[in-house]
Image 1: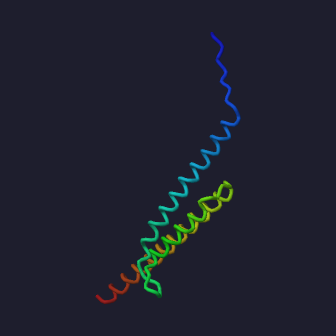
Image 2: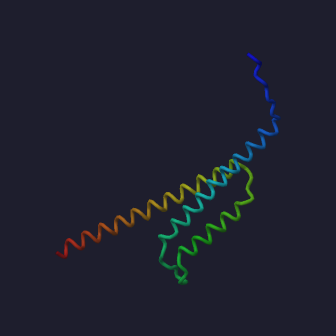
Length: 115
């Protein structure tokens, strides 16, 4: 049996590949979070005191936050921002679902009372 050839890969390649993988993964997660934020803002259809729809206001703010964070390179800080952002979106979605459920229950209760 012939000997198995040994392939030597320089350490710099591993470091570069690791950085690419981390940045690629973070970029995908950030894009996923941004899209989730945009989907969530669709539920905010009412206006603020100046007449500006909340969904427009929230989308601008989300875009601004992502633009400000675009230059961040520390993987720990990026991970913390992504986890915090995801947690906030999930809390907001849960509150919207709870409010929606409560509204439907109130409608059902009121409609059954009027029969």
